[in-house]
Each structure stands twice: as C-alpha cells, then as structure tokens.
Length: 353
Image (tube, rainbow, N blue to C red; front, side, top):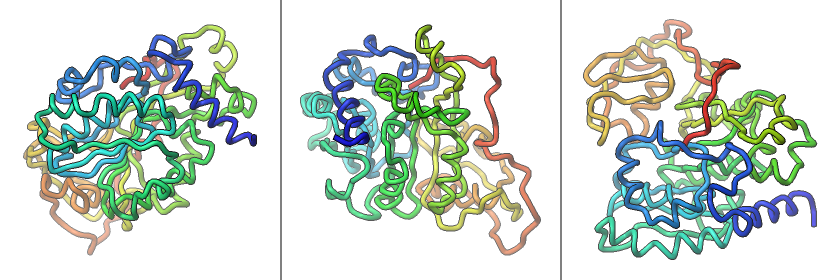
C-alpha cells in the first residue's frame, strides 16, 4: 500500500469507524460554533435529524446565499448536514449532491434523506449522495460545466492531491460558478513529520494548506483572485498535541472564488460602481462579498474590475446594478486582497461552522 493510499484508508477508518460524535475529536480543528452562521442556516439546521448533526465534522459554514434553483455539489459531505441545508435553500427546482469516500457517513445521509425531504415539504427528493473521491469527480459521472456552486467543509486539507481536487472543481463548475469552502489553513508550511502523522492528518492539521502556497496554486490554475469571507485562529484544545505542533499557526478560513476568465492578479480601477438591490433572501439590508466588501442596500460603492466581474458575471448579477466597464483604466485600485491580511498572534477562537 503506497503512502497516499495508506493515508486515505486511515482517514476513512477515522471518520467511518473511530469517530462516533464530535466529542471524539482530539483537537478543536473540526469543532463547531454557531457564531457566524446566518439565521436562515441556523433555522434550517434545527430541522435536521439528530444523527446527521452528531456525526458531522466541519470547520466553517460554507453555504452561500442565492441558491434558489441552483445545482450544488458538496465535496466530502459526511453525513450530509450542509447538503441538506443547501437542498432546502435551492428549493424544489434546485438540486444538491454530496460526495464522500466514507461509506458509513454516506449511509447515514441516505438513511435520513426521505425524512428530511418530508420535513422540507418537497414532493420529490432534490438531493443525492455518492460514495467517491473528490480527486476524481469524473468517475462519478459529474460532467464539465455542470455545477453552479461547489462547497466543502474542512475536507480538502485531507487530500494529498489538492491540485487535482481544484482542477476537478474548475472542470465541473459552470462559467461564472462559485466555489465556497471552509478549510484549515496554516501560516507556514506544515513540517513533513507532522504532515505524515496519522492523527494530525486525520484531525485536519497535518494537511493544512499554507495560505501562500494556496494562492500560488490558484494563480497557476488561472484564478488570480480569491476572497476570504471569514477567518479565525484555531485553538487546538489538546495540550499534548499543541506542545507537539504549536509552532504552526492554524486558521479556519472560509473562501469564495469564481470561475471567471477576466480576473486580474491585483485590483485595478476602472471607475466602476456597484449598488446592492437588497434582493438576496435573508439579506435585505446588506450583503458581504468578503471580509472587506460590505454592500449596504441602495448605497453606491466603488469597486475594482475583479469585484465588478464577481457581481455582474455570476448568479449575483440580478441582485446588483453595476455601472461602468473596463474601457478606461485609472491605475491600481486601493483595495488590499483579503489573503494579504494576517491574523494577529493574540487573536483566538475556535474553528466555526
């Protein structure tokens, strides 16, 4: 058994057999908090069967708004908590698909599918689950340019071929489609001895992506601009493990990016202005694109060319009035990308979901 296969089997066994609830986790990397969940998501979550919640592990709340009628794919869906929430938001005309390599987790999701559909009042199921690997979505029959939104909750770090995962994501996303995911990132490259440690890897620490390597990988894949929606320093909550790996700073970061062909590697100023209409369900007063773009309903806001594209060339187009184009250039836009902001060393807080 090679090293990658060995790690995969260890992770499958860890989440399928060893962990029976969130209380069995050894660190705080995949613990959850309600702090940043939108009220709509909390309300839907309250309708989910207990077993789905008790055996679900995640480090964020990677469920974007404006999902009505959309086709959503959740990578590493576990027991399906986020899939069911997305299915409720997508509505009877939308569809949500969850993929996970752990059979025990998928079995729980399928076990509760019919009861959840009944609770949501759907006459036909708009959700499905498949056992498979997020590095090979083609094997599951997921076609090119077929998905509106890809989500993932603290799973991509577990893959030893992250480039393949993101390659598959960009393949299946429709033009203008969105990747919205939460994961564990690190402020430095995780030393090899920790990356290869079975427990640290399974607890989502060993495979954490160094934020700058993540940025560089996306640039090489044709995506020069991603946005941070939320970021919190992770408390490991295990003195023995913290002593072992405490030189590495870990963060739970929620990221959104879009499959767009006209993004530039820095923010450029074309004199464009965006106005939010207040029309996204659950967001009547303001909408936050990321941690430094908060659009107040009706208020004109200067935006860079990349932000303008994210608002007018995606499913958010119907919710914004964007004035101006790229015919006149005024130089760099004074807007620091979110990934250049660093957490202060004394900032604390558990990973949230």
